[in-house]
Structures are given as structure tokens and as C-alpha cells.
Length: 186
Image 1 (cartoon, one colour):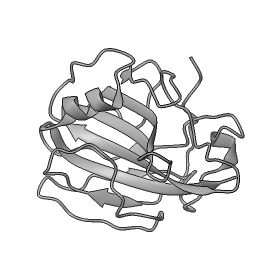
Image 2 (cartoon, rainbow, N blue to C red):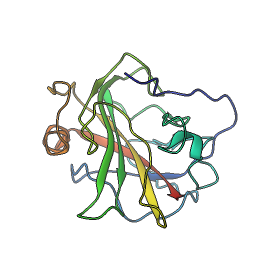
Image 3 (spheres, rainbow, N blue to C red):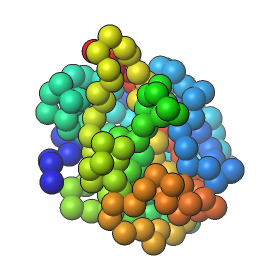
């Protein structure tokens, strides 16, 4: 399994916060850059940040053209009742309705970043377990959406679950979600 977490220790920028009351777990197309937008929720502030993606552009070192590592990623504490966190990296610009690059569930409620050896990884659309970074076709630029979900349960998913299973398992359990979007072109 790849080393998928690259730590960074510097000031982080708040990118996008969206409350979720619908229970859907797909990415939001409302955000097209890493501009700061904060929407307060009745559950409090829940944000995801990244020094690596603060410019709104994905560094090539964290893509298929580099080391294919998860960029620096941190989130604030979820609202009361948060039992675990689920993460998803999704490309809404990919042909055929989008492309899942990473899904991770059951990150402990006391962690604030992806932590190696924790959580349960799904099968991404490359057909692999874990993280595979941006890799758009040459000559194109795509948006990549990181979403962190504050979940009110430990989800009953086994390794290599599908995106459909991820959506079903999170439905009705999302207390809040925080989203960060950055672009990458080749």
C-alpha cells in the first residue's frame, strides 16, 4: 500500500464549508475554485483545509505525474454527535459522470487528518484500494473535490467497497460536510 499522507506544518486556508441535511454523499459542483467560503451551520463550524491546495491548483508532486500522494489535509472537529469521518476525492469533470479517486470511512472522531493505518478504504475508479491522485487526460484541466463528512456512526463497510456502497452507507448519517476544490491540468 502506498504512503498516502504527506504532512505539512504551516498556516492553512479555509476553502469551502457546506452543511448537509439531505444525506447525499456525492460531490458538490457549486465550488469551482479554492476561494474561501464559509457557511455557518446549526451544528457549528466544520472546515477542511490544505496548505498544498491553498492556491487552488493541485501540485504535480501529489498527482500521477509525481509521487501520487495525498496532499496536506486537515479538518476541524465535527458537530456534536460525530462518531467518525468519511473522506472522498472526486473528479466531477471526468467523462461519463465523474471519477472517484479515493474513499475512506471510519476515521476516528478524534483525528483531524488522514492517518495511515486507520479507517477503511474503498475501491477507487482506477480499480485500486486507497488514494490515486489527479490524472486528467493530456490537454485538459479538471476540478478535484475533497469532501470530508462528519458521520454519526461507524459505517459497516468492508475494504474495497464501491462508490455506490459508500453513498448508501453514508446516507442519513451525515451531520456536516466540508469541501475543498482545486484544479489540475496536464
